[in-house]
Length: 216
Image (cartoon, rainbow, N blue to C red):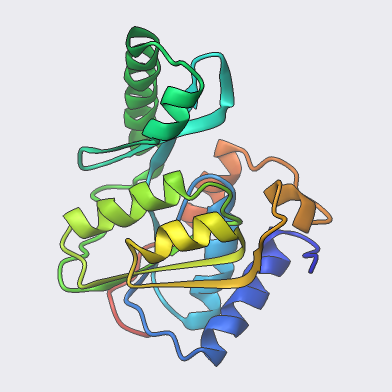
């Protein structure tokens, strides 16, 4: 399965979720690329759009390799087997966590336009453009739970089988159009997978203002 772009993936994911009769109150995209997919899902399901700000905790010596994730309010997830296997020193890890907490605050100031969405007793549908390890998405799920969401759903065009299993243990349901046991990188499933910029995320959010809960 290949998607032309994140927009194409979002439209196809929205149709898939409609076929699955998914009901939700909010669509919550994960910055940055997940927001592009989430816009199309929110449009297709006629639901309000917002974000959950998350940050990956990268390995001190190879920052693209995730060993944890952060989200508000106060969510910290660490992959202890990976940390032990790669001999991460605690003081090095603490430095990365402190740096990512600061970046998380910066992202919140930049992207969260006023207060986070009220999720109490609501169904949150968290959307990303693809899920490799599941760490940042798990942090988003726990964030929604801490905000007293009644149910937390996850939707993505493509996921690794390990991430799907991981998220199935923390979310109420996980919807993935493709769960690939040979998954190696999200970009492999997209013809166009250019990096989404902060400016593009802001433009999308400003073009899709929060609406009152419920379909218009």
